[in-house]
Length: 236
Picture 1 (cartoon, helix red, strand yellow):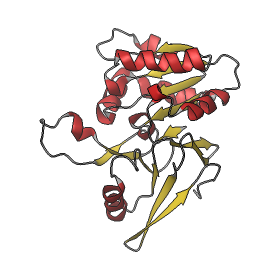
Picture 2 (cartoon, helix red, strand yellow):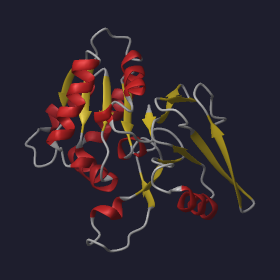
Picture 3 (cartoon, one colour):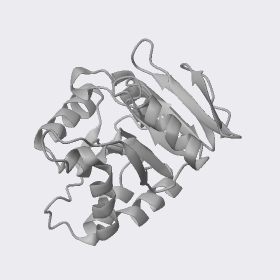
Picture 4 (tube, helix red, strand yellow):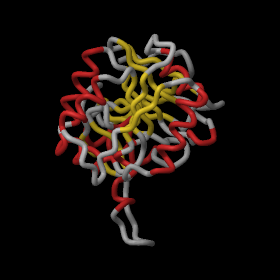
């Protein structure tokens, strides 16, 4: 499940979170939260535990990599033993760099092959695609300085470019230009919308009213944008 955004602390994604848990087929799923993109923010971890453990009944664990002495074997064990993996938002590029350095990616691939449910929000959604439209410059820009959204390579577990927060952060124009210039196909989600992939089929789910997913496709220099609501399948 790749989610466009929403405040988990305000339960804006609760319906999507509940769906993620249901897809494990377990009464008390083992949920692994990976908050690398936020620098392993303690408050984020507490919020995740409140939602996934207290409200949804999961057995929650954390993979903390920022300054962590976690061994390669421990990383592998945490990921492979999870019923679901949830990746939090933040700095996409920094997160992926740490993952590659620490051997996280092969473990995630193995987990996917084993049937673990992979999920995430914002940066934690971008990571599963071939690329994303990211605000990574926001994290390094000087206060008050201009920065721009740009393409960042990701893991390629599912095809295309992913763009989160379409409705909240005015990302339509830069995404349109990226698709026009690259010819790549892109999926975008409003806050409160997500795309669930199952055997190559992508279905839209939502947790907020008037939340949608969008498909951007380039042909002969023109970009078409199609909107999809809850329950609809994307023609991929």
